[in-house]
Image 1 (cartoon, rainbow, N blue to C red):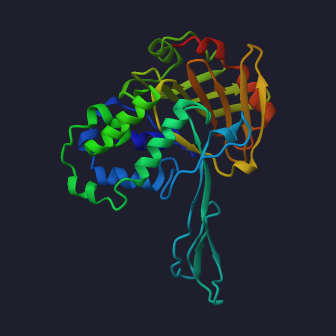
Image 2 (cartoon, one colour):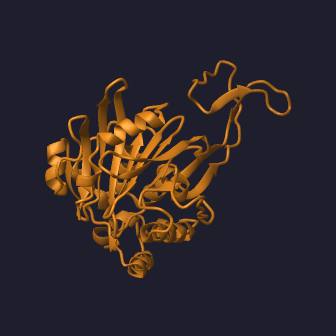
Image 3 (cartoon, rainbow, N blue to C red):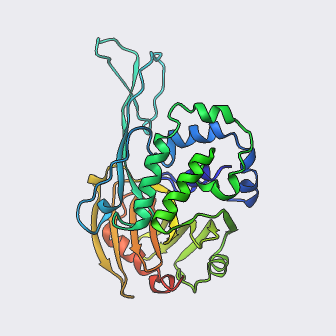
Length: 329
């Protein structure tokens, strides 16, 4: 499995149960690059398809200050559907009359989502570098002619530039240029996987920042210290909460982003934990967010429990010792 597929499956808006294995990374050179780019173009966590990335920020502190862009996937051309076709309640396709009044067409509605950075706010060098790389990447080889000509041939770039899906030296040079411009290091290949709190603490070199309420499912850590895992917590009066946790170390060129749906549907506020850490909590109809901008890393919890309130997010924030996590260098 390629790194982009791993990112998509473990840090997307829809939870999937994935156990990450190191042998998946060792097989990356054998992965067809055209398939990879197709997967990326289709759905890097519902990422960008075409056009120039347009960033904006409303206010100096908040979820809107993480926005990479608003993206809408246009509805495909409708095809005739038999009268007996079944459309699930969760499908975006709905059986309706077409504009000519004829029955039997399945209309697929456009899909829109807000894409946010997981590296930092818009004034950070990590955010700016991510924006610059994505803008370049999506404008490069738009017809995929270069990629098709390379196919599965070994470019010799995977070892260093594996995270950026570089398939030409020109792309690799651009990564180096952006990293040098902002004084960032490159994202290294994941060095270890883990499946417990204790394994994570040992690999990351942190103390226990999760306490007794939070439990690590499966995750992985990079050489830079960035780590990510699927986790859950049990809160009194609320029950089980399922989330995805990413701790992105600062000083690294990283371009993992997150689709959160309609940003206008979110309620948000700042909250200061009992340990003195200021966090942003944002409650949405399908996912909710808990964000902390620490000294050495940027933390995002993508809460997958629908209808999670701001008060519940405050309770979740209190189960995490951000001060201990902040000691990580």
